[in-house]
Length: 317
Length: 179
Figure 1 (tube, one colour):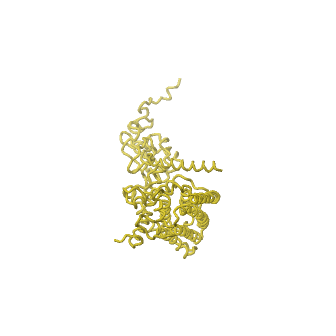
Figure 2: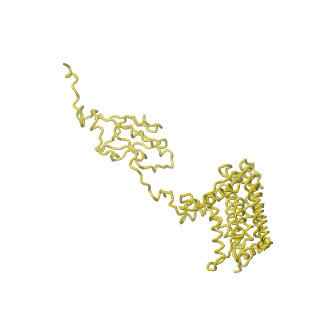
Figure 3: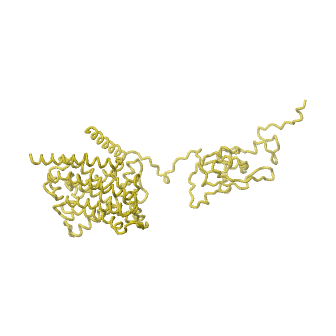
């Protein structure tokens, strides 16, 4: 059994585990949201509702997969595939443990950021090809939001890159043996957290798909498995952002030796997933213009200042 | 500006913490089919027709319930027995219209029509929501155990003449009032 970095077995294992985790997160999120709203959530299918996701999947597979006659067929069909593949591709560079991963790339962070940008194409194409007012509004919002939040998502990571001196995520984890980057890069962490939520357009920044305002935004016209792909891709994106935060600021697989490294990674990533769900349960959605103002007028200068101070400290020490 | 940002941030963190603590609070949900709620005796649920202590139908087909019903869901037809008692030939309640307001119970002079704490009345076929007299009539007396209309009312039936009812004075001979 060859389980080294980049072996077919490792790739298959990571792909399978990530997709299954994302699917299970649907149940996990609904239960947690229930608890935080003082109710129980779905608990009737299987033990404590654990088989809810199976029921959901059966439902979504047997639904009519309808393409609107007025839609642009090619881009309509391609859009959900794009977002699914780009979020899964991003997992290629995530170092799960010292000897588990897909690629040991020396441009890891750049790769993740590039894939995140490509994700914007999916929501744009999906919304535009639907030929629907709500979908169009949703995709316009998504495009503007994702592009503007990409800017300081990248800048907030430059502090980490400067401290490590490498774009390689594996090097970044190993550089945190002496101390996690959450301490010297706390501002960068907060900015990345906010930008990450906006990037994966989850609540409270789910403005592209705000149900109360514009139906379901860019995936209004989608049904069946195409909707399922958008849906699961959102959860894969959630896992991705949590893994990135773990790797960049919380020392990845590092931790006391009584647990294996991969378990430390899973624990840290899962606690961030839970934190994102907590944010969904607690924080209200801002208005669209508030989101843009907040991004450009507050977060962007803050991330630049953070980068400046980090650079100055590195040079002076 | 800085104060605004700090206040906003603090309020967000406080919100997150207060919601997080709810994880350990008691939940409001009642797991209904497994855990039956206590239904109060005077709950206004499924409508029944009761019988008097002798086992006869209480309903005298006076139509007051049908008149009182704000959604007109009660339909009935008066019939008369050989001994002079009135009874409904048919008595029909359309529960797909009924709003469980209880006005029929309040209007009923004989305590025949009563509302019970049962509320599990869902049906798959709409027509099954229309209940006939056989479905409505129960064998018991409902909430009022001793009441028998014909025993206390002045109505003359076979075997009970005017003035023979409970607490009823003998009818006055009008002519004896002459001076």
